[in-house]
Amino acid sequence: MALADYSSALVTGASSGIGEATVRSFCSKGITVHAMARRKERLDQLGDDTGCITHQLDVRDTDRLYETLGGLEVDIVVNNAGIGRGFERLYEAKRKDIDATLDTNIDAVFHVLHALLPGMVERKRGHIIQIGSVAGLYPIKSSVYGASKGAIHLLCQNLRLELGGTGVRVTEICPGRVRTEFFDVAIDDATTREQIKDSGISDLQPEDIADAVVYALDAPRHVNVNLVELQPTEQVFGGLRFVPTN
Ligand code: NDP
Image (cartoon, rainbow, N blue to C red; front, side):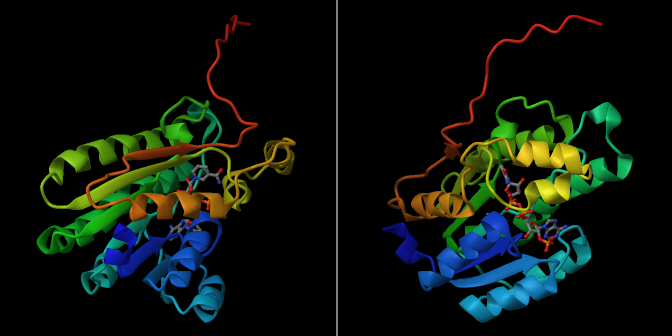
């Protein structure tokens, strides 16, 4: 299977949640992993636990990002670092939260790819994993976050066209609600945050997403897993709403 063809990876947002679970999974499979995030203590612990190579970096620091990635040759890129600041309505969101979310979820992703894709194309080997979201596929009443993930959806679709014939594969993973620190970071108001977190359902776990990543990587070379959409059994999307003006 194709996973055996890959020996190295970059995982952004590696200090918690989905990124951390992915690093642990990759390292257990003998892949050399470059783990990137801002929180040093978390990265140090992950490095001690798994042997991954750590890079303490804010992905929005574009100059340092290019400096760091300039020296890397990796087979797998997991663009996972992401936040949901400005999760409330666009017209209520703070300007700095809009910037932080778009800079992290979109701009940094483009720069990671811009830095690493040329090497992959030259080597004719590589796999891009984009952690998107169901919020990029369906409206969830969060314009800033939803649009940031919607951009990732179209990025993946366009990349597959651009990379046609290079052997580089592109997979978008779209999770529903996962039990991570995401909402602790996203939402300041404690009451709202706890309401969202404690909805009484069985959330996805970060390891469920790491398993989906491995599934896509391990598909035979002639198979590109385009999109994996997974959500808790107890989470549903869609329906019809009528909202009278009040
Ligand atoms: P976490 O908050 O647990 O993890 C987010 C990770 O991103 C952390 O490691 C954080 O590290 C890193 N990160 C955030 N901002 C930056 C930055 N500027 N520079 C470097 N690293 C950064 O949440 P999740 O694991 O849930 O989130 C991972 C991805 O999954 C995100 O893209 C999110 O949008 C997506 N997702 C999450 C869902 C959920 O319900 N949890 C559902 C669908 C998608 P540090 O703070 O140390 O820098």
